[in-house]
Image (cartoon, rainbow, N blue to C red; front, side, top):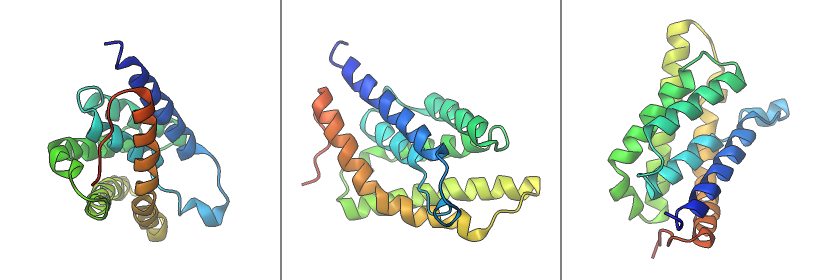
Length: 166
């Protein structure tokens, strides 16, 4: 139990940092390029420590994101819930992928997330610029190796062994 405390602290700080990255104001020309930082960090923790981070955390973080961004309450919560459900289902396979294949898996997870948001926006009659909807897929996939490396390093420094990509 005491070995997991530093890991939970590192995860909590990284998730808080992910929330801050999601809501920090950016210039208009960069706002559409913002990756879904919180989702990437949450997926990492779900892949590496599924017993600690799962569906309930995804739902709560989604509600926090809905509240902070002014989105329809439950929109991000449902989308994150679906992504984490798929990530947990296929985590044993994704964990052993080389980085290029892992990036493709992340692209699929980000597509599920964005499509769920797109569907909810369509049902509620909200229109969103298509570029603003689909550009985070590219930037999020490109940011995954950095997120993976940083969190793997923080996880290694906190105690338990990180995932090795050999």
